[in-house]
Image (cartoon, one colour):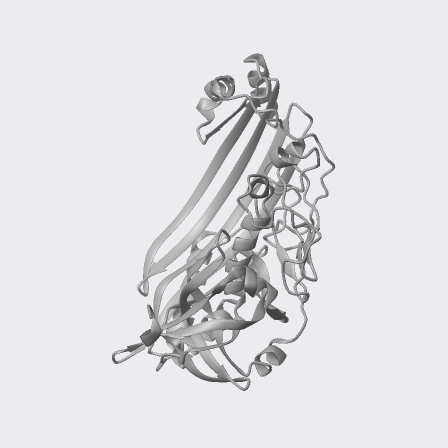
Length: 433
């Protein structure tokens, strides 16, 4: 049964508006745990999502069983009829979709090649130094195709490929154990991505061995140099604040702040989902609405919220192509090199990972610094452990003093280092005092 037949079935059941999307994906994955091979598998999945509107009542249904599609068409219309009426419950109108080049590489990668890449990742890491150990690791190659059609005229489809790998480990010498740290990478091309495995494995092993002998940092208020991974945590909190639904429901403290300063003047954030050849790029969102470059924060001034169709109709405006409620590929404008940023730190810490909470509701930032280093006069003096970072998210946004030109891959795209001043650092002995 093709997508148009499913639409016809929903219309026959009485839907005023109907939409169906289909995602077909194939995965080849190898995983490791505690230095040993854990699993090797190949999977192909197909998922259909149906949405129907009946007299401004919305129903939604998903299935991965093709034999259920006709009954699903009946069920989703019945669910719509049983829902409460909502004047904003409509499906999006069609928009021109600009295809993003370079999102798909035809690549015949078998399980043997995936296993070999995984073994290279683990073996390169372990051979670098006898003191390092793998906690978990994986290599995965994915090929997918998504298509969306609706009775309102939406028609969009996209093919994608992605190779990604992940390696988490630690170092131990006697009774001394380092913090966990990891490396992540992703790319559209299998060959180009796995070519970086050896470099990343060696870099992680080197940093873990250097972090042995960590001690508690002193108690002080100073600078924090946040890694791209930690910047991703900050971006996640920001996504909540600029989600139009949260703004409309007054769950966001950024409500009514458009064209007002909310951050440091050195902070500019642009969502760039149309960049060619990157696995985070996409030409349309999960509703089939075209994506576009969107300036969210410009020199500290809030410029935009993220709208899906529902939130957009509520304000009689157009969706920004953010049906999933978050930026597709946030890009931060650089202000300095990483070397310059580190040199500017008179007293502070480098935060490789942050294990804690960043609340976009009350602004509380509190948690442990992982894989961190104490910095004095621009020099990494010693690795730190049992050290907490404490601050207010909204104040930290206003105290950003630099963004690096260097970036690293994270699950939400390539992100830079960020330098924030005036943050409280707490040693182990001061927790709870």
